[in-house]
Each structure stands twice: as C-alpha cells, then as structure tokens.
Image 1 (cartoon, rainbow, N blue to C red):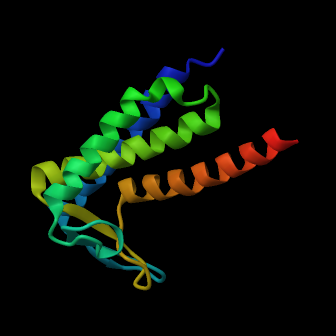
Image 2 (cartoon, rainbow, N blue to C red):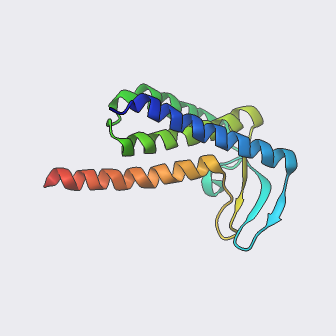
Image 3 (cartoon, rainbow, N blue to C red):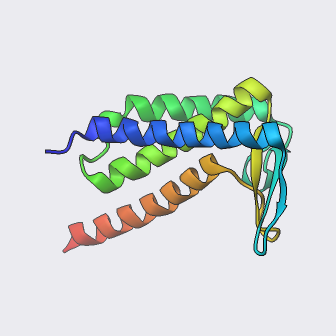
Length: 147
C-alpha cells in the first residue's frame, strides 16, 4: 500500500530543495554559460511567467500564499492515486519555491534561458509540468468516466 501523504510531501520537499539549492548556487556563482541550445545565467524577475505583473511581487506573493494554503487545506480531496498526487505535489513545491523568493528577496531568481522562451527556474518547471499534467489527467479522467 502506497503512503500517499509521504509520497506527496517527499515530492514537495524535493522540488523546494532543488529549486532553492539551484537558485542559491546561481546567485552565489553567477555563471554565464552559453551552451549550444541554452544559456545558464543569473536573472531576476519581479513578475510572474512571461513578465506578467512585473513589479507586483507582493501581490504575487499573497496570491501564491493563498494558493499554497488552499492546496494544503484541500489535500484530503486529491485523488489517492500516484499521478494526481505527483502533479499536485509538483505544483505545491513550485509555488512554495517561488513564494520563498518573493517573500525573502522581493524577486524570483531565473537562470535557464533558451533565448526564444522566457527564462525560468526549477519551480517554474514543476509548475508548468503540473499544470499541463493536471489538464491532461482530468481530460482523460472525464473521458473515462463518460464510458
């Protein structure tokens, strides 16, 4: 029997630790690596994805905190299956990772830059994977429930 709560919180913790560790390393060493398809360099972002709400860090922090509290409160309603547990854990870990930056630094550290896409970080990756995954999961669930 899978201990879903332990699985969930392990994923959340892993995402937050990897996110904060990579941001610490990037902010400490400030690399400027120009690899073939991407650049790794230190950037700051006072907005959300695609520079939405630039300069509105505290509004974004409050929204993030509300989402974090809501997800923790409604954890009991997340289906006890690995896929939704994983995807919601990725979402929560990503939200916490970027919330920490907004609350402590007043900006989010980004460092992965493909040039043609806005720069991002580990928390952003976790959030994006979780949102896309949850959309697909619930579309598939809806279709299977109609059969």
